[in-house]
Image (cartoon, rainbow, N blue to C red; front, side):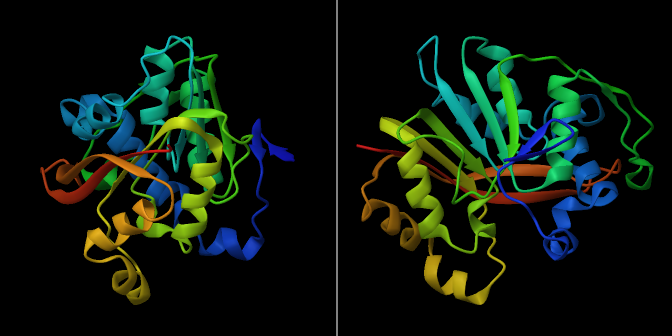
Length: 250
């Protein structure tokens, strides 16, 4: 395992992979994700609060648990879990080093972030970070996670599954790392990028059938869970019609 600025790298991206990955573009997508997930004062609250509410409703009741957010972005959901549940071991996994660097600086090092959001009409702002000792970030592939078999109580991913090239391989890996009775929470707009994925997984019953035919049981289905993403200070927004599902490993 390699490491870069305190972030373990369980997958070494090639230079070409870094160039092709839009989520490595700091000034573009990292700043936008920071504004969405960390700058509550600019948005009069957390715009994706319904997402946090849905995921947290399925948190384990145990005082001690191991949970992971796969595709954690700048760490809002897993950071909230670590902050609210100090007895848990919390892991944020992403495939973007730049997202993880921002997450680590905010949630672990307690740094004050000053993202440049002027082009979206927002004023300069200072986002004061936290220092959480039960939270860990790492770069890894969703279908090759750095966890032993059956070691997690809960795993979730949001706005991820429609960006995966190999959903069955990722689903098999999530099944591997969850303990029996462990839960998987998926929230996604299912806004696929490839025609083949639309053909394979739309309508959503096709995606759910894959899970139900491969040793998962469905606990909850909410469709749609509507989320509103602010785009600028004028109030323009994107409305995401996400599918939210909870599955359990028998």
